[in-house]
Image 1 (cartoon, rainbow, N blue to C red):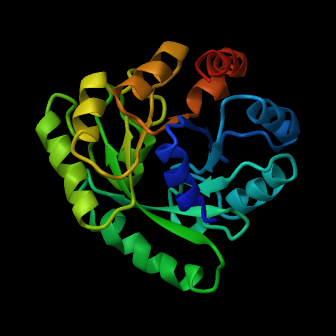
Image 2: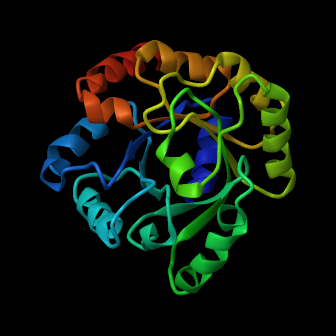
Length: 246
């Protein structure tokens, strides 16, 4: 069964999905085994790999290394075309709906086709919406776009719904790597109420309570990256949390 079908099946059963985001540009390959062992005994159901600025071939090498230590699905969360690798299980084919830079709405996708045509890689069309978070994120700098103001909830809702109507299979709301604050429950709930496709929430989530808030507001998949980069003991918190809510 495909990664996407498994996501739908799990959501249909009421399961909470959780992805650990690994940025190849910030990850020490020598720590892969010990880090992934912690991922395996945490509440993680998926591993996302990607970043805004990553050297060519680094992503492929990292995915290959991670594969040695886990059976969890590895999904590419690409910052650019060169991060696509057939060693992964699936690719989030991201369209930056919050921006108006044509390169990240469709340009990079056209460029990617010549690689994808020869790969046996599951491609999942995904709407990507960046919400302003109080800091200048790497995504904003690389794509030359700004996040939607978190006070403009109707625009966020309408952008997400437009993505669904265009045929996106997942919707990813992101505060951005290193965000000072996660998305509010009000934003998450409002968007979720409009969508019939799975909702992914990421950025600025650094505590167990914030993870719970995201799920409580309607997130189907919660993504955490920076918190683990800064403090791997966060795994223990989420392990305990998972045991309590299962």
